Length: 599
Image (cartoon, rainbow, N blue to C red):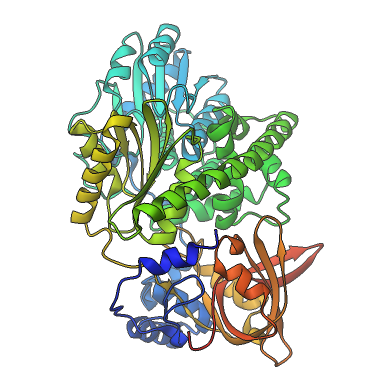
């Protein structure tokens, strides 16, 4: 994809307000570099003066909006201080009471879950919690291709005929028909997707994105909603003189789901992930241990590993393999079973990457031909695997800084997935299209959505979606700026610095990890590794050297430009991480961009 850089340049808007950091107005990936604002710099200086913390940590805290008086609580977040009262969500007490009634009455319970990480982890939470009380549940996850997202009439009616209670997790809020079809059982919905004006006739619908909620907890993922329901169950059990399972030990699943579903890491989400990572480091859950081992993780997982190493493997089953494989891996308490499932998921993930590469090339070519300067970037193709269209949409979104939709058709009907940018609510617009009859169905949340569309309504639907997104401001900017926290010299980039800054983590959506520029450095060695990745070593001429890795660098112009460096001086930018290999800890730069001085 050598044309990626040109594609990005084509959508840049004139008249950037922010000054170019280090004079880089157009990097090798077509982006303008922007440094910390004057306000952030002043706050960082004030924080350092009042706390005595390392300057780099103060800079990160300031960028995250943490004032000096907030520092102590931010660096040591306590879940008990941040966890909301579960009963603040509508239907919560009713949902928990019904679940406890099913447990005490030894009723037959089914769990209907979405096929992604959030759905799988939510199901595993419930299965684990029930197992610790001597109860089992039937797990049902729909096939992405044959059944599509969410409950369907046939599956729900069949489950209702054999069960007393069906718990829908990470789905169900818009499933009026399927829930009505489950008339022989009670249905409890634990979800976070955007709700419509009316709710299905379920026993309880717990969802922070119901229209009658105040939105204070709208950033929660489904697993966090399930966790809050279990907290409420624990409260009701204590009132009855009973002791429930240890919920803190289940936070590894909540952390994985929160990061993988790109929920913003602020408030209680940040505390859930931080505590969950600590639980995960204890390696007590067989499924996550097996998955970490097959992915060859030599350190305790970080939020990066949840989002880019473990999450994609859990997702692989739902994308191109057995829909319930990821959930069963997370739920199992058998190490041998976990090892076998982890190997299968790793194999499926490799297959998924190969399928994705083909669809990505075709989608990019089509989107470029259509134009990348519109409010919506979209592509559609016959036979594109529905399991990878969401990933490809994410790639298009990242490249163009615009909402993106990618649709795979099978005959006259296409299933698509979309990803949005900050400030543009894609889920609401997709839901409106469905209500207007332009889509067969559709829904989601602000940053991600799914849809089903008829071939003969495709162009009309995409034109209308583009119009709705434009009204929200989509398409007004160029390629996303690369925001940098500051400049570092090679000698200052050490393990101590990284560990100091990591105290402000975990980093992820809504709280990106700090990104630094290394100005005027010399590339000493560079070579292509793996499938289009670039590995290099650079130094500043003062003795210090740093290794760097740029994943997918050869998908665009950066790989070729830096591999043919001929010793030239360049500016490099990226995120620092600690690389552990055979007991040795060293600094590595996860290279994201580069520029020639004066670019």
